Every structure is written in structure tokens, then in C-alpha cells.
Length: 368
Length: 214
Image 1 (cartoon, rainbow over the protein chains, first blue to last red):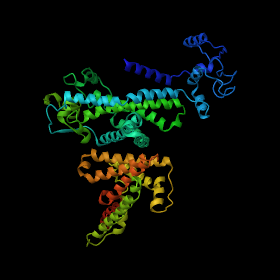
Image 2: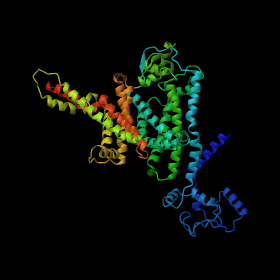
Image 3: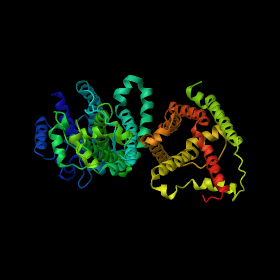
Image 4: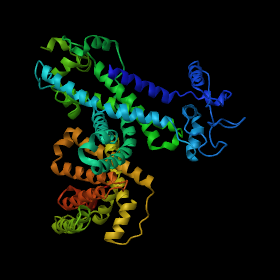
């Protein structure tokens, strides 16, 4: 229950970060009442709930006739006294981002979207993100204990058929190497404070974070190159087909029975498109963070950090499943990426339609 | 003596000495072996063949150009990227002037440093993953190839991790790998940085003397 409420609150915060309404404070005519009372405060609350605009009461700053609401205001310093400034700050929150940035640059104001961003990042992403990869590892360990290694039922035939070219393998391992460096350095940047700081102390955490940040920024552009290369080398065969529907209905054979597939099954295709689409998201948000002057709007940078972290955590978590099934999870899989060839029986059992297409022989007659 | 003082002081002096003496010992050893005497009458100049052999090997042969394109691009990217980093990065110029010899090398801007590092990293990673992905390359590679690659990668990586220059420890960590790399260099295939022109030249001289068109 608490978790659900937390997630809901996180979504609301994030949505408000992106969709802050800028129209209110800029367009409506200001109203002002010098004799603020509790009843009036209630009236104000009700008015706001009806969608009307209520400007601050008392001696809070009010936009001069035809003048800007934000920026220097007339009157002596500290003229607000102890009164609530929530409406005043709400005005900032809903203000034009360009005005806010200008105000920050000139030292006149601070953004309140930064507070929303900080709450979301500190209270939700940093707090829970690390648990996703840990959870995936736990699920995979449990699956391995229950299911064991998926063996080639007919055993190794000794005959192999080519599966991936040398350029495909190099593109794959190039991406794997760059992704591993980025994942490790990114996790240190994101989770250094909540995880590493209590374990190793501030000095070690500071050194690790500084190193990770430099490494992450340096390898980021190489990831874009790796992503483009991976896309070009693997796009063929990764479009969804009718046969994938059967794979989905049978949950990839987890419910028992044989599931036919071509060179790539639905799971592999889904993983490919996840890498490409989330990879594009990570690239775009990463570029905006590495070159912040490109976009200029601070809210884009704030949203970028959130999306970058969420996308990265999703990709890291699912990549663990990919690594598992490609190594200890399935017998014979790793050969495809190390040698470029797979055993014929492996091909018959896991990619029968592809086997028939490549060899011209029926898969079912030979398979035991 | 702190960790940084150790790796930048006595350990660096020791490593640099081993590097210089080791490289000289290897080069003199190779030259002293000499060449088997060829008693046939020369049809062309062996010396010209030596230079032509060196130059010709900088470009792939036409029929192999497509097959080896990845290798060529990654190889040149890595080697030129690394050379630029070593010679023209501001921290390296400062170190060379402070500890070795006073030279007026032009300093690269920071963005140039980053681009050169990215090209070098991309090239090195591509070369290594090709080494492990190609069955033939994997077969002819031994521990020396992998250690040499990984040591070079770690020297580059630790250098880039210290880019913020906010912790002396990170610079010391980089220097530790530099010291290890310098000590390992003369006794490994990393020596190809100095011997490649001898082997290419030897092939070129042999064929050049026979009058073959290189």
C-alpha cells in the first residue's frame, strides 16, 4: 500500500515537473485585499480549487500595473514579514521558464521546480533504483535453482552452422564493453551517496564519484557510436512477425511445449528494441546533461536526469537477464557470440524455422 | 612518503630506467642478429626496399581493404589517438616539463583531449573485442597480447578518471599503472611500437633486393 502511494506521489511530482502550467500567473488580473483573515484565506483556497487565480494578500509583492510579476519589487526589504509566501512561490513555480532562468542568472530568484526534482531524485529514484537490478539477480538465481540450466536435449551434434558474422560479434562486444563501463560508473554516480558513502566514508565516495563522473562523460559519446553500429548490424531479422505471437502466448516455452522461432525469438527482438529505444533516450538525455547549454531550459535538464536514471536502471536490470540466458542459463548460447557458430541441435531446438531456412532441411525429423 | 610521491618519484624513476634500458637492449639485440647473407646478385636496391616496405604497409592492399576495414580504422584511431594524448595533453606536457625535459609542446584544448581519448578508447576496445571474437585471432593470441592491451587500457582509463584533478589519489593511481606499463613494455609485444619499422623494413629490403614491386 505504502509502495503504491509512493509510486503515485512520484508520478504526480514528475508530471508536475514537466507540465507546470505557466498561464495563471502571467495572464490573470491580480486581486488584492489588505485585510486578510482566516475566512478570506478559506475563500482563497476555494477559489484556487475552482481554478481562479488569487494573488498574495497583505503586503506580499504584487505586479505593478503592466509590469512584471517577477524580478525586483517596489518597497522596503523584507516587507513580507512573517506571512505565508506560498502564493508568491506558486507564481514562480508556474512562471515562464525563460523568466525563471533569467532571474536565476541575475541572482534574483531560485526555481521551485528544482525542489520537486530533488524530492523525486532523492526520495524515490536514489532510494529504490538500486533494488531493481538486485531484484532481477534474485529472480534469476531462484529461476536457476528451480529450472537449472536449459540443456540441449539431443546433446551436441558436433556439426555447427554460422549464426553471427565477425562484424556482428564485434559490434555486440563493443556495445557490451562500453555499456558495462557506463553502467558501473552510472551506478556509482547515482547510488554513491546512499550506498557507498555509509560503507566507505566520504573521502572514498568522493574519489569514486569524481572518477566515475569523468569516465561516464568520456564513454557516453562512444555509446552513441556503439548503438548506431549495433542497430545497423542487427536490424535485419528483428522485426516482429506473426510467429512471435505464438511465442508470447506460450511465454517462450516456459509453460512447456516447443515454441518455433526464426533467427531471433520474441524475447530477443524485444531486447533489441529495448536497447535501441532506451539507448536513444539515454543518448539524448545524456547529451543534454553533458552539454547543458544546448537546451537552455533548466527543466529539460531536470527531466533529463530523471529519464536518464530510469532508462539506465531498466536497461541494466534487463541486461542481467540477457547475460544470464546467454551464458549459464542456456547451454550452447555463448558459442554464437564467441565463435559465430552454433550447434545444429541447439538451432533445431531453439530456432527451428531459422534452422530450416539456413540448411534447407526439416528441423523436426532430425530433432530427438 | 605518500603514495603519490612514491609512484611519481622513485617508482617512476625506476620504471622509466627499466623502460629505456630494456628498449635499447631489445633494439640492439635485434640489430646485432643481422640478416642472413644473400649471395645472389642484387636486382635492385635493398635500402630503397627497406623504406618502400615501411611506407607500403601503412595502407591496406586493394583486395584486403574491405575485409580489413574495421581493423584499419580501429588501429589508426587507437594509435593516433594515444599518440596525441601522450604528447599534447596539458597534464602530460606539464609532467614532461617538470620531471623529464623542458620541451615547448603545444597544449591541446580540453575538447581536443576528450575527442582524442574517445577515438583512442573506441579503437582499442574494437581491436580487443575483435581479437576475442575472431576464432583465428583468438587462436594466435596469447597472454602477452591480452595483458598488453589491458595494461594500456587501464593506463588510459585511470588517466581519464583523474581528469577532474580533484583528488591526488586518482593521479597517483594513473601513475601507478604508467609505472607498471613502462616496466612491462620492453619485455612484451608492446615493443612493436619500436620494432615495427625493422620488421617491415626487413621484408621490404628482402623483396626490394630481388627486384619485386612492393
